[in-house]
Image: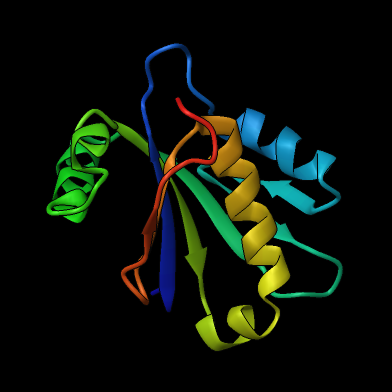
Length: 131
């Protein structure tokens, strides 16, 4: 069971970004990426390993709307139907070496113009660029 999860919600309309594209983008940023059957394993040098999964399950849109309720992003998130899930086994270790997590989050958020949510602190942020 993961210690924490960071999610990037976005719309599948317009093709979206899947695991193969995510793997390419992260590798282009210098991260070590291994492709599994349903997820990527990502790390920077000998830092902590993160898992990156992609989900378009029906509950994704419901969770996006729930998370966004009362936020300035409620309308935009209500249209999000897919997400990347960045799984974290040891949250303290990952936060101690925060650069890998930030690089993965920023790369995927920029690629999708998505909305980032962290389970451990409830932080929700919108994309840098309009999407």
